[in-house]
Length: 121
Image (cartoon, rainbow, N blue to C red; front, side, top):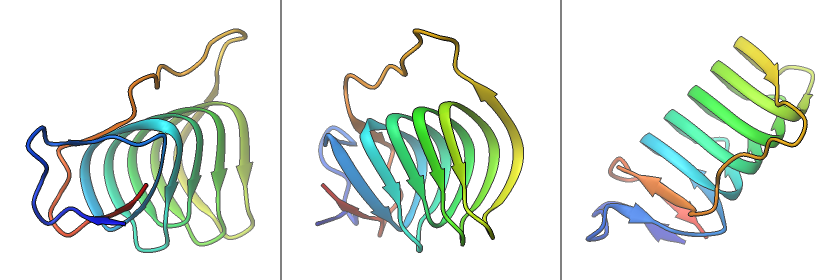
């Protein structure tokens, strides 16, 4: 686990998969991204798989998106597979990805992390 109280020199954290529990304003990309119950993310996510337990505002593009029961998502999501659990709150638009389209998440990063966010890689 890495505390992002001081951004690394490149202002990016790279990992194939990441678990976010904290506040971030910026863009996330990777293979598997999980926003934990304490997550408060404002930005864009591009990944293969995204699971959200906390609060997210922005745009998501992923093959599989799972909105857990206590999450709150505001924005636009583009997906091949979408699972919304009972109790999840989703305010926005949902659009299926066209056949053969894969999100461009070749270079996993977190751009411009906010102080005190937690990332587990």
